[in-house]
Image (cartoon, rainbow, N blue to C red; front, side, top):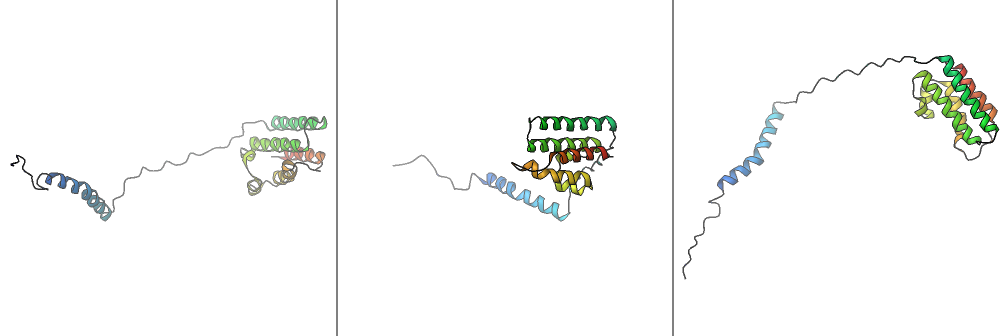
Length: 160
């Protein structure tokens, strides 16, 4: 029986495909080696200098102190009426004092930990917040609230 199909050699039809495949693999490697040899570095855009931040006092110190002293008075009234407990009063006092210091100094003391406040060299704020930590986070505390209210007022009135 005769067949009409002739078989071709295995690589006779794919020489061009073989050359393309080798070029795709070898050419990037050669380019990479050449660039490394000539120590090519892509041009970096020059870094823009950081903008200079000018801290401006945009508040009236007297009215700001008055505002936060009133907040402390409101916390004290609610505590005396039994609307908030010792823990809640300390949390609100801490927030009020931190907010005041943040507004007065433009330093975000309301977002800082006790250690970070200590590194800022603000000893009155640091000692007050340190005193507030135990009653703020404990379920029950025997901390005297009058001392806490007076301490919060003192930090605000002595703040420069």
